[in-house]
Amino acid sequence: MPENSDLTQSKSVQDFLKAIYGLQQQSERVSTNALAEVLKIAAPSVTDMAQRLVAAGLVDYEKYRGVRLTDEGERIALKIVRRHRLIELYLVRELGYELREVHAEAENLEHAVSDHFIEAVARKLNDPDLDPHGDPIPTAEGKVEERSLHPLSEWPVHTAASVSRFKTDNQEMLQHILDRGFRLDSEVEVLTRDPFDGPITALVDGKQRTVGHNVAECILVEGRND
Image (cartoon, rainbow, N blue to C red; front, side):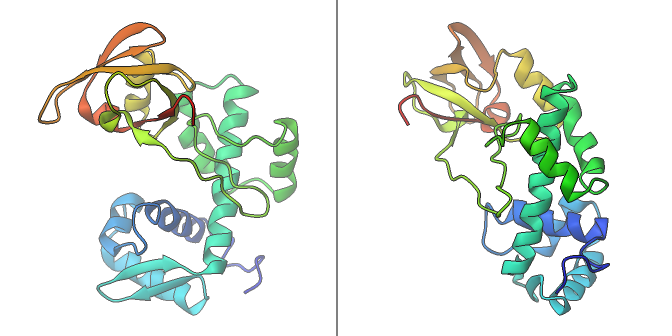
């Protein structure tokens, strides 16, 4: 279908496709209940939207099996993801926003700016690979860098790693992580991990820090030599 159609320019449609893309990183098909929770809408509304987008060739929907993006749906979703992540990085790097502030701002701006504006931002930032959370920024052609990252909650003890991504948009969680001394590219080593999802103690840039299991799940790391 033409990209400039009214349907694909709709904020609700773009948000829907982007939400499917995000959830598909965990499973091939996405349940309507999972989408309803992310989008904060009723499950019947998710079903109605899914059926509309099936007719437009943007999603594949099967009752009781959920939805997945078609190639065209994924292309549009990646375009919106690219917009969102470039805007976040621009806000942090050029306008001095705090990390906890950028997600909500980018959610609004990603629908309001033009393709020309986004590509100007990309040039201004020297075509970056990662946003300020460590998420990969899709290229203009829709390609996404693949990385092997692991939650700090599962990283082996006494093994050097680098902080590579913060897997949360929650403002309070992000600030808590930053307050504990974690930054992208921080050098980290798990010292102890309490059983039964207990707290984790780690060296972060040489300083001992303790975080809860749920927090450690949101801190993704990779080996120093990866």
